[in-house]
Image (tube, rainbow, N blue to C red; front, top):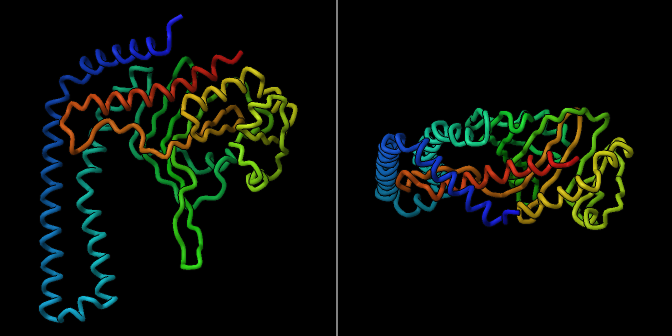
Length: 316
């Protein structure tokens, strides 16, 4: 039996060979593109500082310090600075999109036949149907890939869901979910819907899904970490076998205790992992290409995603 460390070392060696072979010819062009976008970035920084500095100096000279301290002026300057930051950030986003569209598809080919799309996500109707996230106002899509792995169609999307919360001083935007959502198309359809949510202790009742009943299971360890709701108690117990629950707990270990939740309905299994981290970042505008360290980190993140499918498909 090969140890996990030896498996990991073997996998990293294989990836290094794959990385050197598949991407070697791309490095010079990608580095040239990086330098071009980096130059744009510094030019925009310089121009923005000059323009804002000239505007501020002109206001002080013409209207004095009193005008410069005026609330309306401060608001205008804040707005101008926000626009400048947005413009300055554009080369970073454009380079990121350029590299991901060129690299991610080939990186995913290591695992199977996949198509990659930048800033595409799972549709909102499906997300709401999972009953995992509750109310949200806005959805920001990032990485998205779809394809087949071990004859199972899977879809992986990096999503951030947010909502506006009212406070005494006005309102603020809070994050409902920030992580990856995985959809597996299973061979067998589900008659009802079963939702496995992170156990929120005394707050469980606030997360209870309408028209679903709480399902009590005999696995004490599983009950400690998860809370189960279903429209069909019998099917929920049929789906959540002892082996399946063991693998769900294993997934929680793989992602180092991160919040991980499941929804079973129609012929799908949806897994939501709240990573609170920007995933699959293969490069940076401020690091020379090739950036093997970032590529390896992305590869390990993708490997972790596919380990979920391996674990779930191992259930007999």
